[in-house]
Amino acid sequence: MEVIIQKNTDAGCLLGARIIAKLVREKPDAVLGLATGRTPLQLYQELIRLHRTEGLDFSRITTFNLDEYVGLPATHDQSYRWFMRENFFRHINIDQRRTHVPDGTAADVHAECRDYEKRIEAAGGIDLQLLGLGRNGHIGFNEPTGSLRSRTWIKILSEQTLRDNSAVFGDFAQMPRHAITMGVGTILDARRVLLLAFGPAKCRAVTAMVEGPLAAICPASALQLHPRATILLDDTSAAGLQ
Ligand code: F6R
Image (cartoon, rainbow, N blue to C red; front, side):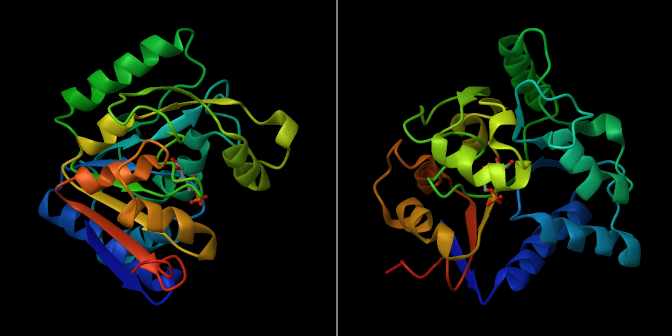
């Protein structure tokens, strides 16, 4: 693991965007794995800025998002498909047909999971997977104690995740209890992983991910096995590291 500590979220997101922009320039048909949540918002804003001011070209880029809530249609403003369109895709020149988010409304969600894996494979695998980190150590929606070899599957969201995400969702009672998520095994197959975690609330999970034992109780600790994982932190999320 390569751990990079920046002084704050702004600096961390700028560096993250620079890493992705470099890949997009070097490999214009790259396959990007993307994340939602609060953490990557500024990173997407910087990529949008680079598109507008420097012509960063996404026209041949393919994307696969990590996860989606089961039951939410793409038209729901809390769906991850909606999030990606509003916060990134509609501001750049990406071909919408090359953007993939699991379909949370599929009649057979298990078939959708299998099909998502096949689509990633058919695209040649993921060149760079962007990740955030849950306070409980989750990556994607792989909650503690799930298999570290999992492929895209359905996960029941933990109480902690429901509480954390309900702040954004608005109404706890309305929140879906299940999500489709790439598995930990799917994430580990990406040729490069870039995880961002900022702020004191992530400190404990960061310490467990970087220095803790490799254990299903902290799914992100599986990244210790990845040959090319870059962890971007700020002073506060890194505060527990030796
Ligand atoms: C999002 C995702 C989640 C988030 C994590 C952190 O697609 O898969 O693992 O990255 O819950 O969320 P934020 O960034 O909101 O703290």
